[in-house]
Length: 272
Image (cartoon, rainbow, N blue to C red; front, side):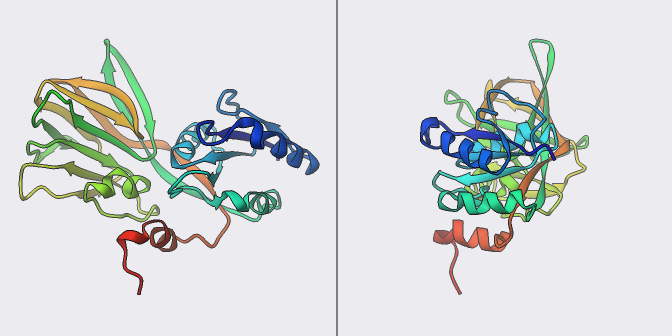
């Protein structure tokens, strides 16, 4: 071990001055070095990344850390904190466990998108979802979906969500998609307001290659993990497939998937 930690802070939720000095002093007292702004100085020579913010912050940190096989510990300073392992009041007790190696690492499936822009092939890593949604000027659009070359039903709709099991509890859930355990190696296809009674969400193998093209409508916005990616024009296509790397999250025990779902989505679930 290098005894070195990277710190990733969501500055819209936390001021750097309010917590960074305390964290640096605490880590120093434990014999650890810090990279106080790992999001600005991304290096691979850290043992783990400490993410302070909400789910969006964890998503960004985990995507970057996955490139170097580095695990992330998420501390919730946001509202939902579905991906965060601990709440803000538990930060130091949690860190003591991590420094004693009293944790496991949870690996999560990621996807990769491929598309052409200005004649150049672009690729982006995805942890939650890829969302295709009609431009405000459009009424309905038709997105042709092919699974490893085979077309499936593609009715007119407002758009489409391709999600990982991790992303099943995000936008896909709001659109009527199923909650899928993060241990399942699969991808989800969830239509957005499809104009067909037979259109239903699908859970497919992680071995499939998903090709999506815009066949009706002039424009379609594409976002990755909530971030604008590109605009598809008529005839454009995007390929989505399982990424060769996985996101890694530090788990300290006591947060089983059913428990997290029950606690974080309690307003949508009945207690027994």
